[in-house]
Length: 340
Ligand code: PHE
Image (cartoon, protein in one colour):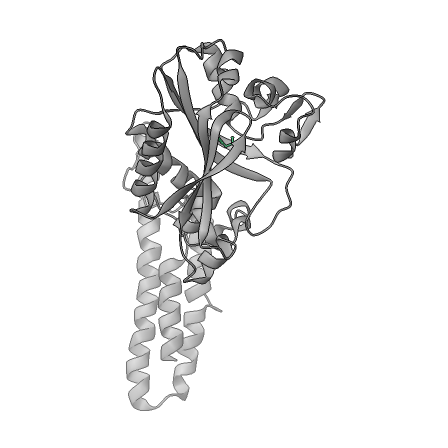
């Protein structure tokens, strides 16, 4: 019986009352003729004399709780009604309300904002652009020749012949360079799409933060320094390496891996049992790309990098399956809080 009383006590506290109907249901549910507390009272006769006294008292307290909450709301609404009739513009700012639940940011947005914040401290400004893109901005201007196998690196969802869902946010950088002169220092961020098999490590939708810096005398050392700064800030001095790679729009190009080791299950899964996790691509902007947007490569040079947020988020939040970011499961999302 004591357990039931405790449970009821909680239930009374948590019972949501948003309007007059709720209030009457609340009263009836607990202290109406068939109410839970009324029933408890009826069972008292089966108890010992001593228990009758103690438990009787506890049940009575429950009843008092119900009636206090009931009267509290009743009075509030009564007062409010009075005020509205006497002065239509007056609002009761103290009125009890649990109509809305406050949401939280998605973990991917939390991490995206954090990354943007890290780079903004070095002078990068964040921009956005269209997710439906034309062939020029997504491929041709970025030095992917027609029919070149490099186009297969990014399996594409086509909408019609030369319109597609962007495969990377580098397309937004082309748009920006077409309309602005150096010095340029931007981050292009947002969702990108690739026709890939969905697995625990990859998805056909994901988010990127891509950086671009174009100025006079930009060198690979500048690129390496900014990567080092980023990794040290986000992961606290974790080992990393630059591995030579190929992208049509950068020359030379590299991929950046961070070292996680193999000492727990998540690390094994997300590094594919190597201990190394690839987190970004980077390189010096190919002179052909600069020419395509009317920036003179004899005067200017630049670097670019692209970060996949979900990959890093697995590690950052210690999660072992990328698909969970896209399922919108409220039990998962509720666990994240952020000031960003
Ligand atoms: N755009 C590339 C991708 O999405 C990443 C990248 C950006 C690589 C800039 C090098 C330089 O795969």
